[in-house]
Length: 302
Image (cartoon, rainbow, N blue to C red; front, side, top):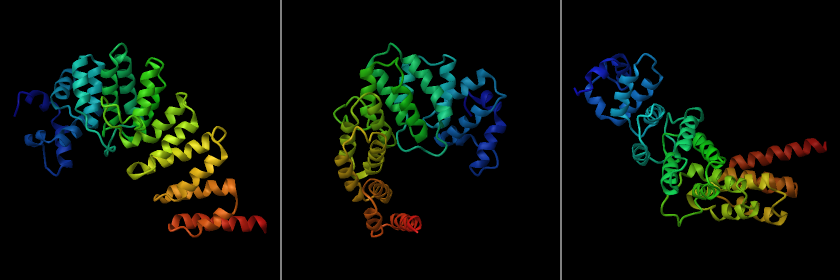
């Protein structure tokens, strides 16, 4: 074993418990070479009360990784001033991006960490702050709901300069492909980023056109959902003609959920014809909606 034997010995029951989950009768030292095992260990240690700060500091510092348990350990170390700014940046740089993994941090777990960092970042250079922030929001150890809430929190923080907030909003909705200093935003942030552009003062019809231009390929679902939300929330700021054009475009989407909502909104604004057209759709869920609406209409008439 390593020089951490005394620290690990104090959490032997916890190590055994994690090991059982991995199919072992008891803890095996070789498991500490597995990043996923260590992350589960850190998650359980985070919730365990009977461990001294000195032992916790030693274990966190030695086994911290890019997962959910690692982020919890990172926040604990931050709160106790164990990490300088260089170490903070180094850790955030090593986070793994991608869709939220199982056990990713919830809003309640993630937002206090983000709030602490935003406060600590005040006075730092733009490139250092935004790179670290984007890597954190991209982390696969943060749930989709938490990362979107984190984006809204950051862009609503008056402590960040307005131009920084605008840049992050456009980073999130992937409109700044010519911004080489920031990593590509996680697609789970796409819709939230478009809506934040409006909240930061950009004209809804302008943001709508940006969203429409992104309704293709892998981004179709998120961009399409943003388009629908923009049409619902800002119908007064977008001409009725343009709304109809966009809904007709959505009706041709490869995503049945987008087509169904387009049919619903077209029926609300244009009338019963769209119920009948929905009955011919290639997707059963769209046809089911159309059948239900047709039955409701007949019942109203009767």
